[in-house]
Amino acid sequence: MCDDRTTVDNTKYVGEKKLTRRQFGVVSAGAGLAMFLPRAANAQAVSERDLDVTTPDGVADCYFVHPSSGSHPGVLIWPDAFGLRPAKKQMAKRLAESGYSVLVVNQYYRSQRAPIVSTTNFAEERETLMPLMGSVNAETQTRDARAFVSFLDGQAAVDGNRKMGTMGYCMGGPFTMRTAAAVPDRIGAAASFHGGGLVTDQDDSPHLLVSRMKAHYLFAIAENDDENQPEAKDVLRDTFAQAGLPAEIEVYAGALHGWCPPDSTVYHEAQAERAWSRLLALFENALA
Image (cartoon, rainbow, N blue to C red; front, top):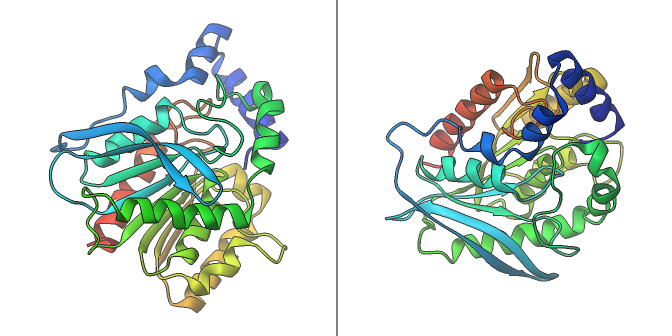
């Protein structure tokens, strides 16, 4: 996930692109870029609102968006280290236009409400983000997962007869695995995009939870993440195979850690669109 190696890679990328300080600020802010995400074919009209969800640990500020009519599969989105922000809301809205009822959460709600930072430049926001990232752990993630899934199940816009999906970016990748293990009877599909810490040598490594899951999975791996931990993809393949669960695990060539959100300094449009198309295919097949 976001760390010093990521910062070095991102800085090098920005330098190679020869972005001016002003352009770099625009990319980091991201709200404008997010507005240019392609709309879904036959996009549905949606309803959206900011709201609070009560959890065992407090009140989480979230964003909920869903088709304006009918009930649909619920989807829980775990943001990357930069938290709930306009780009994540736009990504959720795009998914809702494809027929899903989507909740994006502020994973740092115990410490502060969103927005968390003003840019997606990790080097500039490091002092703010590191303590926040350290404030969430396997136990808080599991409690939150159950609370957010319960919230979705209580919404008229969510079809309780269909499985839910969950998806996460960067630090949100492991969150999806803990969600799928915490409520296996509800989570039918999950996706991790440039997820960090999926396979560790700790007793609470997310990959050790696979046997508790029932979800079909997508792991979209950044090229530099794979270079840093090349064995992780093989461990994931073996673990899911042993559990008898489908898992699409792929390294995305030329894509650096953080390439999917449109406000990222290393946003890779072609590979981000490819990963998005694989997400839609996963949800269409597994949440039927």
